[in-house]
Length: 626
Ligand SMILES: [Zn+2]
Image (cartoon, rainbow, N blue to C red; front, top):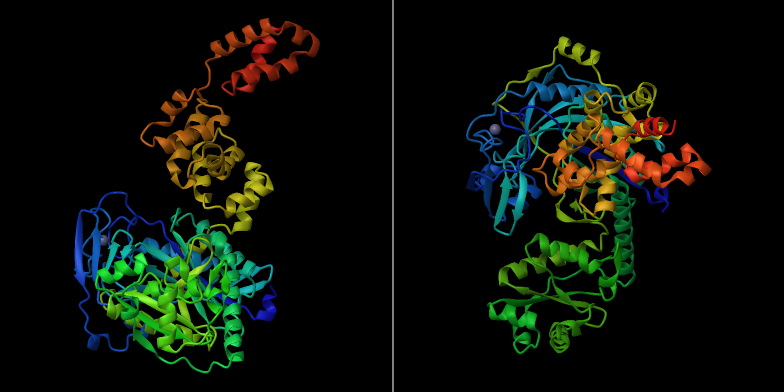
């Protein structure tokens, strides 16, 4: 695709959780726990519409769906602050320090005083009804990320509290976990200077890498998220939220460009067909389906459900049009149903014989006076909800005449997106009166500047020089999420070659998948620590590393040593090695005479299956064949 011609404009925002001792506004442990919740707290939203004042439409949209909110409360990871029953404590200075460090690395302007602000959030993910955030840095002329496609300006850096993690969402009930609420995170935003999908990936990667250089950010699934804003010429600004897999950034942008391009095509097709407006014709067609043979509809009618029908004029054929990655316009519309608690609809652009509904739809078309150019659709279920969804679908269909509706979408694991909600207005901020502003003194800044972490390139060069890492490996480890663990392990296991440690962190996850068919996400950081501990003490050979980790995944409670023993991976004692070699010499006399000691070494190593050090084997062979 010619992104220049399409007029791609894109900006990104990364959210990176910080690795602090405490949460941002209390002393709780900042981690997602594996323990069970000790209590469930049930809340209704207390605010009434009058109190919401000038809350934006997106927030109102969430609010008016009158829900119950249930919060999981954990012993170490939540307290009265998370429940909003005690005022927040002063800002965690450790979090401020890390945020300042990153702001300095990005060459941002740092204010003398940091003010905590409240950003209204009424989706229930913050018990207080707002998220606390503070500006730590503002982009300057030289606050740039340089990419192959040109520089991208950094806009700002905020230090924020993480929201609660959502467990379940239904029409009337939302369940959250409080362990995530209040974990400190930095949000770094760029200006919309990105004009190519690969450039978006480059920027996201670099920002993530700079954060990791501090050695003070959390790692693992969900600890970094990207939001991406995308628009093309004639399209609209789409905010895509919650991408966790950085490798998908480029694909996500590509797919969104594709989606907007096709939606604009659909607009042109409808215009060519002469469609000017879509009237609100919603009828109750339950009578027409009373004697249906369709099991699906029968069941719904048995539950006192109704059949609500409407018409999309001149949409014939368009419902099957692919928007992106096999997703049709019909599927795209289904997302809007789902956002309103309805699983989908049945329409005349699909094969109605699948539902045994041909006759019913023929009668329905007559009743609605639809032509063959139109699409007729039904929503089956509870009456009011179905009518509401019919309205939503008509409104979305009207947007097809505009092209691309402005909205917020959620990123999916395959690089596509689904509709989330209307685009929120720009966030309204109010000062947080419970917390004093934080002064950023010259001394603090001086200390931070003097202890600034290396930038990625500097560190890579040092790894090459100091630890003799091959260049490619150095680059890989710098880009990887295992960087800080690499540096920890390097210090701890000084007898192991740096390249073996790097290789363990970089290759074991894919080998675990390929050789053992296990999920690499199940590797806990301590597994690497334990297995390298065995290597350092010469208990196993490096060839046994992956096997031991596979064993730890299956039995996390068993020690690495025990697993090495069970899997017969322990190094053999010297006497045992001598015994085996002696026996092998006896069996291979002719071979040794013909091919020599060196060739025999290969046979010996193969028989010892990596359970003896090559140097030792060589020594014993030389001694026995003197
Ligand atoms: Zn707490």
